[in-house]
Length: 195
Image (cartoon, one colour):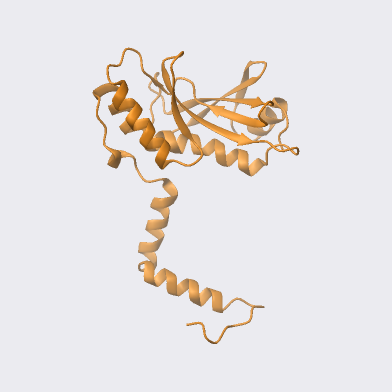
């Protein structure tokens, strides 16, 4: 359970996420991506983690994910970000007008016991997954003024699930296997009316 930035830093470094303090209240880390390309041409995204004690939250933010610069396509960019926000759980894209960039943000509630380790890792991995998924549509909206929502690839879990269903022989076959599995669990009574 993480309760302070020192706890976060130890935990993340121990899990292979090198991070460093950029301010007294903020940690910076870099997460690998597969589709997203940063401004230096690398396949990673910078994230800032900071505790918000007033709201009892850990904020994970990605400053400079997409630089707007002098884009003439602000309406298309905003439309694309609204679509991404509507189709994405937990991670919300937004425009920071002062910095002139598009960012992705996750707010994690931190209870009295701190933030659970698995919850932190899950929220942290959602950032590169979401950025990879929406990279092409957002980039096209910023640069060309148009985007195609079909370019927002399915989340990896959804693709994996479809693959498993195909390998098992389809949805009906998976449903049958699940019914058989439920019936054959030791220690559970079998309902004779279940088919």
